[in-house]
Length: 184
Image: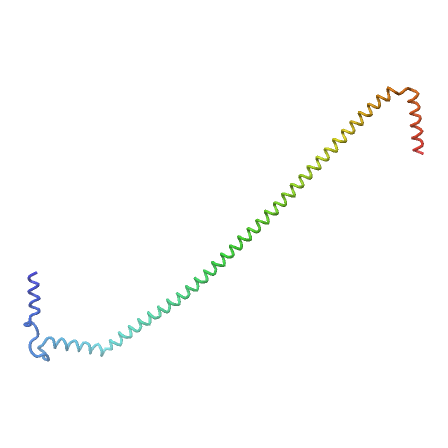
């Protein structure tokens, strides 16, 4: 560390600086200034600043073109986004319409099924009532037929007990006369 401080002290000392007049070729500061000015003049002679300016202008134009392209792409992306949002909204509205239509159809189908069920129940009740009425009529006929058979049998017994031979012949003759009168 001590060596570094000694070197800095020597470099900063006036003994190492240029000696003599400034505009002398023996003065290193003047020689460095002349070399620098010659270098700058040589660069200007070769039109390096114009080349650098042209390169910077080209770069600026490239950046401007990229910015314009980016703006155009952004506008296109916004247009596409708006289009997709519109399409999404349309699809959502269409799906809502489809769901509403399906609900309406389901309600109509349910109402129709109820009506058909009620009609079926009415038909079955009517058929059952008709079967009951038919069964009642058949039962009544059977009861009447039996009552007639019982009455005929009872009347036959009564008539057989009360009937004598001469009275039976008179009844038969009378029946034959009535049949002849009705047939002629």
